[in-house]
Image (cartoon, rainbow, N blue to C red; front, top):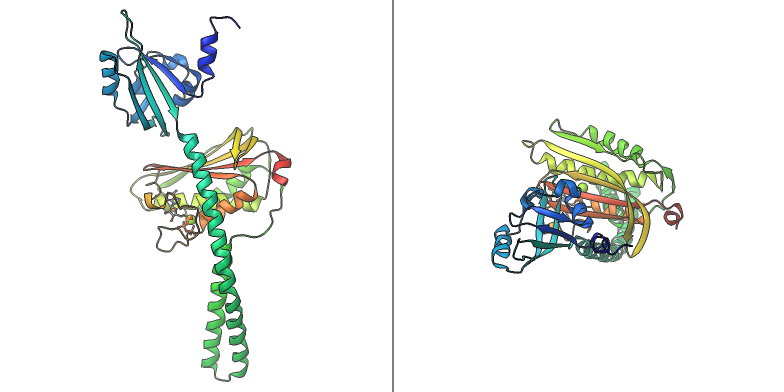
Amino acid sequence: MSELTTPEILLDNLSTAVILLDDKLRIQYANHNAQTLFERSLNLLVNCPIHQVVATSSLDFGRFKNSSHYGEVYSDSEVTFKFTDGRYTQADVSVTNMADENKSQLLVEIRSVEQQKKISQENQQRAQQRAARELVRGLAHEIKNPLGGIRGAAQLLSKQLVSAELIEFTSIIVEQSDRLTNLVDRLLGPNLRPTFSSHNIHKILEKVCALVDLDLSHNVAITRDYDPSIPDVYIDQDMIQQATLNIVRNSLQALSEFPEIPGKIRIVTRIERQVIVHGACFPLCAKIQIIDNGPGIPAELQNTLFYPMVTSKKDGSGLGLSISQTLIGHHRGKIEVESWHGRTAFTIYLPIDKKETQK
Ligand SMILES: Nc1ncnc2c1ncn2[C@@H]1O[C@H](COP(=O)(O)OP(=O)(O)OP(=O)(O)O)[C@@H](O)[C@H]1O
Ligand SMILES: [Mg+2]
């Protein structure tokens, strides 16, 4: 390794995005991580003013100028960047003036806090799911036992009755007991064991699209952006179909609240490497993203979204996402969510390694 290339290699291997700005706040250099963050190559970034690579940001560019003119060191935490393609990210930013007599240069370091947030979101989701499962299991036991008794007694009683009117009452008791049992079973979540076999995830996604096609209003369009190189995945196809359908339906329902705005649902598939799920690292995962341009998830629901019976809908049971999470959990995968006004993205990761999914 020659001495000259060492600093560049070091910069490109940093987990922080590093850019160098001139006194007009034009980018002069961007390390590898910055190019990934801005999704542009170095050629496209050089001489590009910083405010052109981000659509909006909560960063105060005026403070950049102060840094440049008066040598102030400036740092800000949890800055929100919105990019021109609709992506958002949150990062800690620090700006250092590297001026000498000839020119003024600013070194900007951008450290993404997304990863940390995702890990804490994942832990929170797991804890929620575990607590919900315990609660529901306990409740289900307490509800189902007496219900069985009530139902049996009503059936016995109906055999003793002759009046059709009274028999009608007992059948209401049986019917309503069954309804409650059904609700408790749905709350417990699907308890079938998955049956794994190799499937093309795109075929499953096409089925989901066909299923929601009937519910599509003329003002909502679904677009696909598939990576055809994704190999077949060892999964239970019905489970993955149900998990994805619940998410696409939610997008559709969110968009239908605003029929005046053209609704867009984008289904994106990619291969993702080195994905960490509940502390285990999977070398290869299929990533399925469902992105809509709807109003976003209500702030008060964001932290309890995967909990059963959490809903903002008049007639919603609040079970869709909790079921999706259980189903994806059977595949040792995970669901992540990012939601802002105008962009909600659910991301499902499914490990591709056959041996891993069979465990
Ligand atoms: N794409 C989305 N955009 C906006 N809000 C969403 C989106 N997806 C989910 N939500 C919010 O999350 C809540 C929970 O969703 P979930 O699917 O678990 O239940 P539900 O849709 O209310 O009822 P169910 O799916 O059981 O019919 C929804 O009520 C909605 O407020
Ligand atoms: Mg739903």
